View 1 (cartoon, one colour):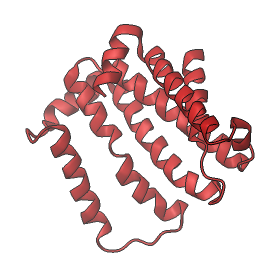
View 2 (tube, helix red, strand yellow):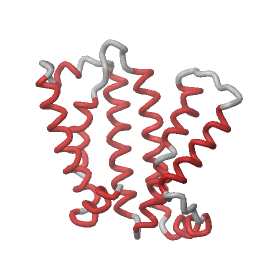
View 3 (cartoon, helix red, strand yellow):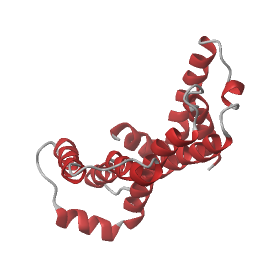
View 4 (tube, helix red, strand yellow):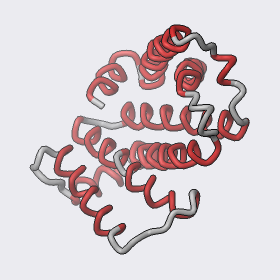
Length: 187
């Protein structure tokens, strides 16, 4: 988040995301070629996976870079990061209806403990001021809403990738990275 914020301040949030994902996408394509595969091999994956998960991948990236770019100060960047890090808990919770997983009694306390751990790590043990968070939410709802949209997008991506892809086909992150960079560059 610090690098994303620093780049966003210098060249704008979408340009920063485009640069990061185009460079990363180039590395992914080189890695793919190194393994003797091409991006065309990835196009044989199921269409729901390619279109649905590819769209969620792009949506996540655009939302999180815009959220970081819209944050007014470093404290808000931290709050954007905290909201974004709801994705692991949301992934577990969304796996219940999307992947037909069963929950045990430990799901809610375990999820709560994980969230407390994330807050503790990101705030470096100094705690979180809910009054300050609420004030920032009211001042800048767009940044917080985009961070939440990013968290939901990534949780959906994580579950739907398992549902829509084939076990032997692997994933298409090597394709999603440069496509995301191009989409952000277009925006």
